[in-house]
Length: 426
Picture 1 (cartoon, rainbow, N blue to C red):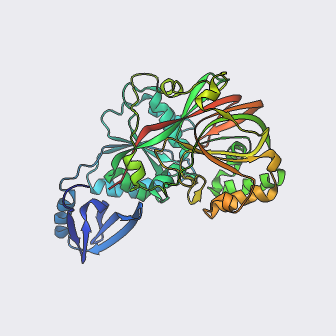
Picture 2 (cartoon, helix red, strand yellow):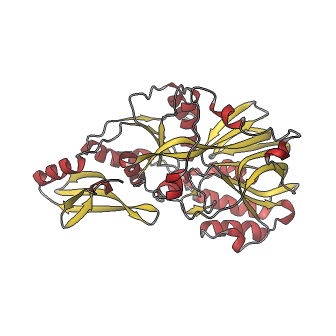
Picture 3 (cartoon, rainbow, N blue to C red):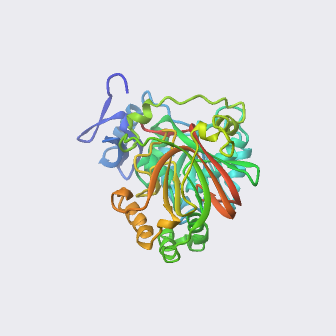
């Protein structure tokens, strides 16, 4: 932030005005939610200070001076994850009302409703679309919004109310919805990468943001929905079952690899992401076609000249594509991944190297946030801008935890800086 930092006194503390994101007055106390710089991220802190109502009103005026809060359109999925979305939103609404923030809440009523809302709603009177759910809810809203775009895609920000919340956690480094709302209300517009999936059998393109999965990983995501009430623990339970079966899938995979660099951990204050130059997209034309046309067809005889290379394996036990550092809260799959680096990170455990120890070891390392190759042999880890997958048989696939039609031919492309979101980057 340029210029002189402005502070306000709250009780005995002197606090930077920009760090006070949400506040209210309750039972004779000022309750404030702060986001304060710590390393490359912003840490959430709550303060409670006794004061008279008159003192609070003066403080409120001082905090709000020179601030402009965004108008929010909140799409809330009350069925997502542990189904606590409505309870979460009631708490957050107290702050929005106290601060005079203009907002609308639209609750979903059935599966796929969020995409319908995003397709049909005119968001021109709002500054930010808030996705109140998990990664699947965010995915549906993105695909709904893009289907009706006539200019740049509206700003879309995740609010962690689901069982996965990988995007929200990667951005905010916190799984608390109140922290996410702090970023949404007081953040700056920042770019994040997107994923474009070309489903060749369906002749359809899908947009994503977090990850792509097939074979074992898609099975875990979708077959475990019968125990969705367990929240994120369902993924762990299902993983243990598949550790016993060691499922593999025959596939021919090509990728456009790039040299691995270590730019350190990504966070809201990450200078790498703040300084990245994003190539402009013409939003009046088909977005997916513009991205795909930057690459030679992977099945073409000229593909090798364009940087495509075929992986030397015939089957895969684990093949995990992650666009953000965290696949779910606290579980880091893509070490060193950045929100707008233009790459997707891939973990590969070939079928010929698959053992139960390696399979289970991968997840142990992920939970403990350990870099797998330092502890478990047999894995490949690389970064790429595009991937091509050709399978012998149709398989169930998923993108951002959402089930897509089965198929046997897919092309995946990274769309650098495709989406905009709110993040406290100063």
